[in-house]
Length: 158
Image (cartoon, rainbow, N blue to C red; front, top):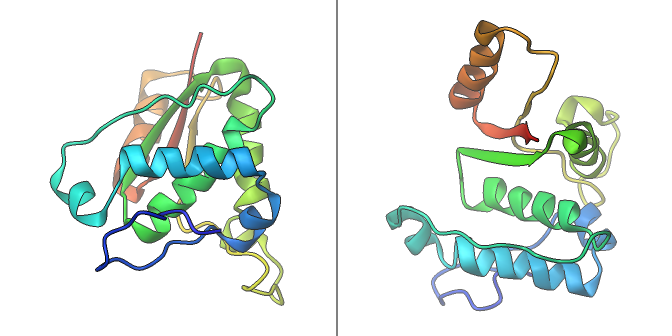
């Protein structure tokens, strides 16, 4: 599944990881492309811009989590983003972590004989700031690790 369908001629096609391409539905492909077009558009614009935003406002149950995870996989693998902060409802934090692990497993979670044509491991870390981090020092360490290591920081709100 190609994501950057309107890319400039000097840029290569960007495809979803195979395990994501097999799972996403047509409306989700549209959502991933919408995120890409509004947040990246082109490598040149991404590298020279201070950033843009958009809202993915699909109804509940239409797979927004998978769309965002798919977009983030593209962002880290192809665009060389460093950090992303995902602020999600606090009661969904563990689900977000589980979804990242299911759709984009860490390299160490895959068997030695996995087929890279079938599944691509995650190329970034996923940090989570949850109620296990009770002290300010513990919370600060999670944020510092995220800034140092890069990746996604999952943070909840109520």
